[in-house]
Length: 413
Image 1 (cartoon, helix red, strand yellow):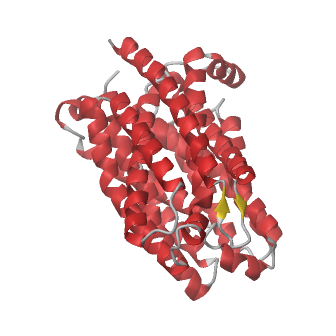
Image 2 (cartoon, one colour):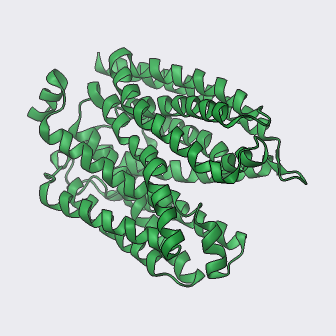
């Protein structure tokens, strides 16, 4: 069923309210992603500040991902039984509270607890955002929607991380969390006051038992295909990303002080490319753009993982083109996969899908760590093998998304 806003969006672009909602959700995503990303670059200050080992720091980082994965599974049975606005506000409030706990943490144990709490709430927030966008925006424009939402990731690298690092250098590693809380409170108040209820799905299956709802979601064949594709998509990024900064410094010869420039330029390119990729997905076909993204990703991953000492200009160029390929896959895949669940199952589907992304991403990082080793000089060895594994997962995902695309097109024709 199309609302008046949806019909207008299909015929003449986004309505004023849809533009406002999309901007609000993008800012909200920015706070979630920045909270996730910021801990890793804070390690150099945090470990001596709390007197913890690298292994303990690694547990603090991974605790967030695994708690987010667990909460998504736990919430999936209830995700379609409430107004999505109310669900978003409750869990976003919990996310802000967890982030505030990180800001006031002064012991390892309290910080670990704070990251678990933050992850528990953040995992459901992310899935609810995608459920809301799928409810409010027609399939024909979801490429543009996902392209704009993905700019939150790039903005976190371009604006959020450098600003957070500057604050931490001035006031200590806790300071960035207070920044996230401040922005989050403003976003939360705006959502509470101006976001309309998102409850059309409640009229479809209002009394479904939560256990039955989960069992139905995980046993529906087309949903399982979507879950498998989502899991493989997540593994691709996490195979490389945890080790990219070390590879840039120790293998490509980039100075540590030049890393912010590399990430900022790459992020800026992604901010520009994201909406363009989304428009292309709506104009020429979401699977066509996904195919292009896969080809570009495979090409650039093979080039990137075989580079030696390289001038910084060429490194930035290769990095930027690689991320255009990655974003082309992510944006078009999210737009395609959003059409898989029925309206009554979107919350549960998105919750489980978000959990799978977190867990598969964590497992991919572990697999990458088992493959990569460090030489006496600090250079990463066998990084090219990680690239070949990513190429393999990309090819498998391409085949899976082809059949998903055909199923969606058949259902819509």
